Length: 332
Image 1 (tube, one colour):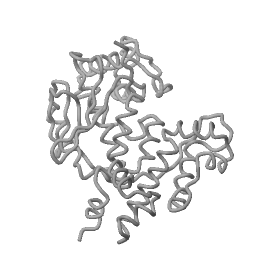
Image 2 (cartoon, helix red, strand yellow):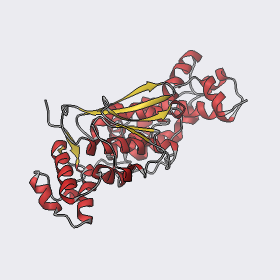
Image 3 (tube, one colour):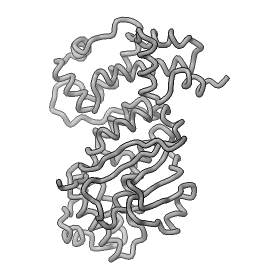
Image 4 (cartoon, helix red, strand yellow):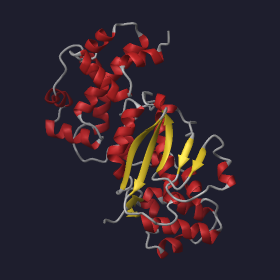
């Protein structure tokens, strides 16, 4: 067993709620051995179980209704760590973003697991904290777990999307007041995990985010990882149907060593093969949407010499075949 940790960023909304109503926030934080200066250390980690106890004590002592929901209302995509935002921002489809979320979720909470489950024509995005079986009041954390996933989906679906179902692992029923904010969402509790669902048809949605490189805090000389990622993504489509540059050639173009190039990409949450695969997919998706080119020609134009390999790679990104994708975006 380890100590489950979460980023201070996720307890700040709870403290802000207390501050807004004049509650003794600092005293409550100190009581549960949490740092009082949360705003100064959003990227630091604290024990999640102490954070949950703080949230429950604040709710009970101050007469706050559904403090987990109230805190979740303050969340936005920017509350995610810089690395997680980069991973999502550079994911070409929602399916890839969710696969990356499953891989990297522990950046946000060190013991959280995220996975996908198919349920008829929907996909459940499930999350669960390890070593918390029987812990009371987990709904406070599960509100944040579900809502931050919702904000990731919105990077592809648009800013107003809400899930048809929101499930809690905790035995918990939202108040009528809380439900009034979610009139198109069904709530269920006492599940094996917390989850929200999305239509299967969402999986191939393209990324809506405008890529604005985050400021670099690195002391490395040369361009930041985010700047390099943006530049490589712009450049690669020109080479897909010709000789694709090697990683050594790309590093030389950037004026840095291969090792430094790989380190910068890693800091942005991607690898060169990720960028190349993403460029191939985006090129193919554009051709399938906007032209009547034969699928085999789309494969060759996107850098694939084997159409079967192209189909497998395309399905990995979008969840559907190139032919199904074209039928969805260009109905006959």
